[in-house]
Length: 206
Image (cartoon, rainbow, N blue to C red):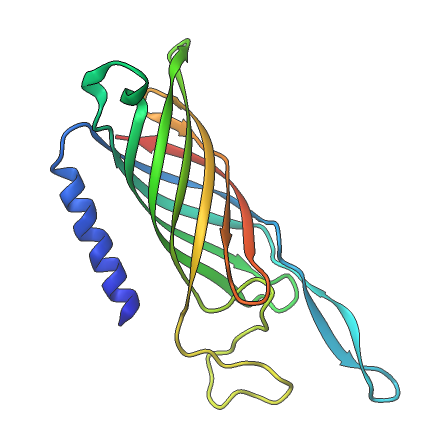
C-alpha cells in the first residue's frame, strides 16, 4: 500500500511539472554494475561446523528511469540559467549469480541538475545529484528471500514487505540535442552495508 502511495505521488508530481514552463523529461535505460554485492555463504564442513564456503554476488543488472526537471532561471542568461530542479523515478534489477534470486530497488528522488555554461560543438555538459527513498526487498548483502510461508529451515529470511531506505545518486552527463549519456553512481543505505552500483545510461530527452 505504501508503495502504491509513492507511485501515485510521483505521477501527480510529474503531471504538475509538465504544466510548468522550461521543463523537460528524460527516459533512460542502461547497465547497472554492482559495487558492493558480496555476501558470505556458510555451510557445514566434514565435522558439521559452519564455515565460509564462498560468496554470493550479483550478476550484471539494468536500470530504467524517468527524470523530469525544470530550468527556472533561463531568462537571466548567466550562470544561474543552467540550474535545474526536478525528480527521478527509477527501477533497478539484478539476479544473484548463485541462487538466481532477484534483487530490485524502486527509487523516487528529488534532483538538482546543473548545465555548464560552455558548449562544445552543440554538446552540453551537466552534473546531477539526487536523494530520496528506495524500496527494495533486501539489500545486496542481505540473505536471499523466498516467496513462501513459513520460511524453510537453514536461516533463509522471509520478507513480506519492502524495506524503505534513503539513497543518493551522483551523475555526470553529456547532452546532444535529444540524446543524453549519463554515467553515475547510486548508493542506498541498507542496513549492515550500503548497496551501491554504477550505471551507464543512454537516454532520450523531450
